[in-house]
Length: 193
Image (tube, rainbow, N blue to C red; front, side):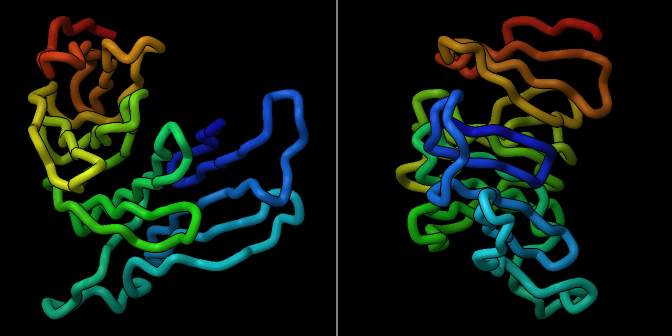
C-alpha cells in the first residue's frame, strides 16, 4: 500500500488498511535544498538515514557539479520495491531500491520534470516533464526512456485508471486534462477544466 501525502513525501507501508503502521514501514521525503531523500520510521518518527543525490545548495552552482539538483517528486512502484525520485534542476529521475536504499541508476528526461508515476503493472515509470510538452516513459527493467508522449504544455501529474488502460494527465499551464490510451500511448481526449 502506498500513500502519497504531499509532493516530495511518500509513505510505503506493508500494513493492511485496518492495521497499525509498523517498524517495517517507511516514510520517504525529498528535500530540494539538501538534494537528499530522507528515510524515516513512521512509528518512532525516527530518521533512519539519508540517500544523498547531490550537494546542498548553493554548493551545486558550478559548471563542474555532477550530482542531482532540486530533488523533488517521489513515486513508488506497485510492489514497493523501487522508488523513482525526480530532480527538477538536473532534469532526471533516480531509481532507488527500497530494500537496500541503493541507487539503481538515473535517467535524464528533459527540462524540469515534476512527478513520477508507475503504471499499475509496474513495468514503466511515466514522468511528467513540466518544462516541456510531453511525458517521458521509462522502462523499469532497463532504466531507459522508451518514448515521449506529447501532451498539453507543462504536464504536472498523472493518475492511472484502476484497470491501467487510461492515464489522466493534468497540465500546469493549460486548463485541460489529457486522457492517454496506455496501450497506444496516444492522447484520445482533452477535456477543459
